[in-house]
Image 1 (spheres, rainbow, N blue to C red):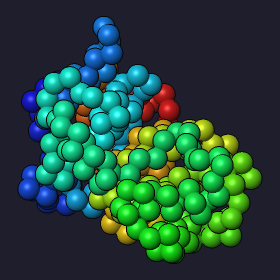
Image 2: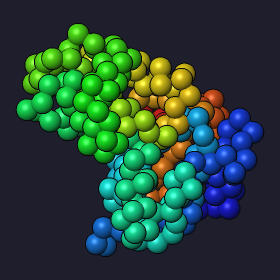
Image 3: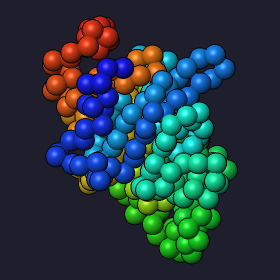
Image 4: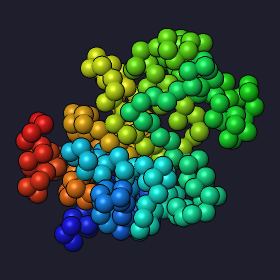
Length: 261
């Protein structure tokens, strides 16, 4: 990776300085046996910033955000979230996970619990919130993701889009400082994609710090403060949506965008 790309990767939008960074990756490497998923990634995200990561399959996008909340353990380099470095210390890992909400491709809801209980269980078990308070919060969040009427149903009774909105509400219930989305619409039928993206757009308007891995280029153009293009385990190019989509500089970015736009 060139020095100019490294510098761009750490420059944040809106005139923010490095002291405003809430997520910091420095020289992060990750290998799976003989495959290098991340090759010395440098990356910073500012508070209240929305960063969208795009790139071909196998480029390291999902591995990057899974390393941010230690679903994958990085091999080398440093990862710091809200001032806490991810080390082998389980206390640090637990603290970081409390501050990072994660929404996956699959919904991962508890099938035996109602929608309300799926959202309320985290605050009750982890943050020791009372049953009444956690359920009050769950109702508020289900209203926020526009499905308050589904509270007493079970996940199997919901559409895929509704289940993903429950998953978002469940992540928000932990009051995270950073939300991580790993291709949150890829498992949905086309007609359900927008209802999930609309919820994420509302979170962006509310100032939630977010890192979003997605193939939805229209969403990236509309919502992102910065777009990151990854390929072969490296950050190749970073820019505003206009810079990256309208005037891509690197041949790899140009080729990728020509194939999907």
